[in-house]
Length: 449
Image 1 (tube, one colour):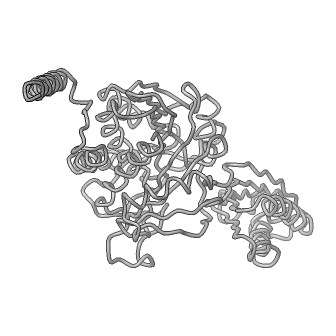
Image 2 (cartoon, rainbow, N blue to C red):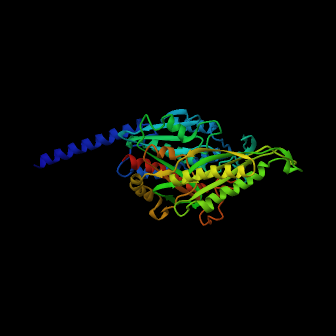
Image 3 (cartoon, helix red, strand yellow):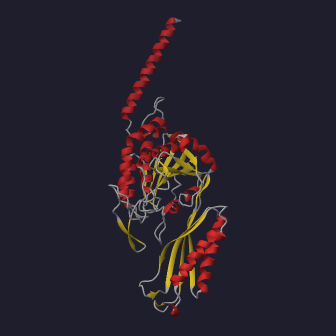
């Protein structure tokens, strides 16, 4: 019996030694982009460790994009930088998706579902005022007007964070139970007039197919939420957005004799007041929030000439489909009736941009524990719906999706003092990017489980 026991022990030692040697040889041959996990080095530990290691690199990527921003459908250099990075990680890359976008496909070592992670790449026609070494000096022409170009909504941080998450996920790909699709999207802020673009075009071109995506996740930085915090809301979280154009046609006259014509600028002013009354007096705001904003007026070429026409361009934000239709109808009625009362005419065009961003209830229920594990349950809170819009909605309309808000405001700062998005003073504390990298990576890993 003792002899048998001794032989058994010897045999076990032999196999243990052989296994250790085989693993060592295998690890030496395995490229650095693929890490074999052990019981003491689980995938979550690896994600956290790598997020620490690449944090400086993520920040540098962000600063490069911030200093050299590109407008919607013009993200040529940004897309190329992303594509080269993904290719260096062994990720299958498709360039020029939806014009300048990039699709990356990372196949895990084990079979399983397909999860998509999305980051938007475009900047805005805003002239930066922030005093930082990497402030944008880029100029461009937008809508016929020369303007500065700035990442005034944080899309540079989104891209940098997803590039970091891609590097981590590529490193642990042998342990992934499924496939990760990386969607680096152009033109979230809207394609230039006359062009297609954004998430809608990505869906149209098949970004969610081949492989067929089962779920999608997106993260948006927030300049008015403290670093280390993550906000979410189930169901409708961001508003539908529609672009409207109202073209008022009057009768040209000398500025000194306005009675000789029909002043379209005065009529436009009255229409703007009427549009404000739609929200303040004709919309059931206790049901859902709604907004009508005129962002641009074009009319006239000289101080002493009453022009023949005046054009208004603006945005409509709604969180309810029925309210959206009612507001559209009221805009048409208000503009045409006010113009008619002055002897002018008004042509109204309303162009849908994006539907409501909808967080799938079941997916959110399953994934919030992952978010709480990464950020700490005390740092994750439910937010109210916002009237900002996101064309991530087009992905959410096709597959179960979840959209989160990541804090980018300096700790201890009041949200009232933090410059809002789309402004020249917009600022992000880069110390929050690491949490975004970890969140992207953990959401992918946990969903694939």
